[in-house]
Every structure is written in structure tokens, then in C-alpha cells.
Length: 240
Image (tube, rainbow, N blue to C red; front, top):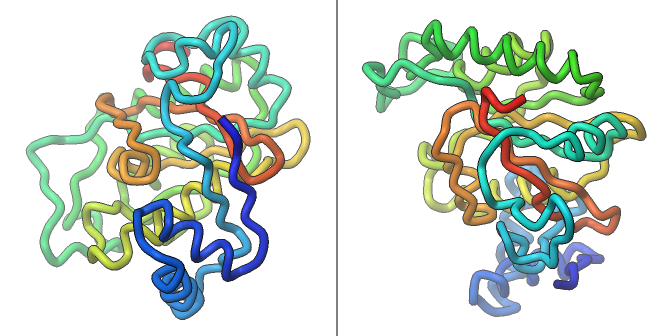
């Protein structure tokens, strides 16, 4: 399936809205909203129908939509860099709930990692390091469970408001954040590195209709250098 390469601010805004079944006028309106919200439309790339199983996969990528352990071929590919790893935060305490008046700076108002999740995050980071998989930029949603997952796994994190949990956003913001996420997944990391995004399952569901049912699951994408990307694997947290 071909990749839609968006060139020019108006084309970007229009293509996103047309993909949602709206018109060119709505595309222009979205462009204005992106600029007003401080988002850089030049960073956005919309893949043409890129969801699980809809590229034309070959070899190990034929079962990219299946969740399981990492294969030797995947490990080897990740060692070479050039991938984006979308990691759902590790296991949380389900007795805790996100408060209606959630404060990103106050973990007491949020659902947080439990001890199993903290051990899981450390184990994932250690496994990637043991495999010799180079990690470059690490970004995470501002919520405590995503920040802590990133810090425990990789020892560092850059907080991005664009990755904020989509289920906690006003409806007017959801599609804009999904477009930004698609842009990140289509951005090629610096040579010899992999870009890690620690986020929420809802964001990936909205952006690509991929649902990560397992906390700590990783979805691995390969940017094509033209703003598009393909899903190459989904790995369980204990599958590294």
C-alpha cells in the first residue's frame, strides 16, 4: 500500500481531515487549529491506511499484528537502529483511578505503576541493553505511570504533552494528538539508534486502530524515510 507524503501546510491539514471523511475546508480549519495549538504541521505525516496487517509484509513481518516474543530477526533489525518502539506503560495498580481533577505533577491523583510494573520496566530496559539494542531519544506522556516506566527502563525521559492520554483529552484535541503521534512514528531516528515512545494504549488505538491489551507491550514501527511507516512486530513485556 502506498504512502501519502504530505507536502505543504495546507495539504497536511486537508489530507488529515479528508482521511476522516471531511472536506478540504475542514482540512484548512484543522491546519489553523494545529497552528493555534502550537503544533508544527511540518512534523505531521499521515500513513495511507497503515494499520496492523495492511501493508504487504514478508518474512517475519507477515505476522506483525500478532503479539508474542521478539524473534532473532527482530532483535537483529533493532540492533541496526532505524525503528520507533511504542511502549505501553508497565503494569499498574488497578485499584487506583485517575482523578477527575488530575494533576500531572501529583501522582496521588493518578493510577500508578505497582511493584510488578516497576520490576517489569527495569526488566524490559535490561533486556534491550543485553541484546545490544541502541536507544536514542526516549519520550513519554506526562502521566506518572509513563514517566516512571521510561525512567526505570532507560534512565532518562523527555516529557511530551503531545503524548498525553487521549481518553483524558477534550474531544477537540484527540485527532490532533493522533496526527502528531503518526508523525512521530514516521520520523526516522538518528542513524544507529531507535526512538522510544512510552505512552497509552488509547493513543495508538485512535491513531492506527491498534489496541495494546497488555500493559508493557511494545509495538515496533519502521519509518520509510518519506513520512510513512509500517508495523513490524508486537512484543509482550516478557518476550524480550
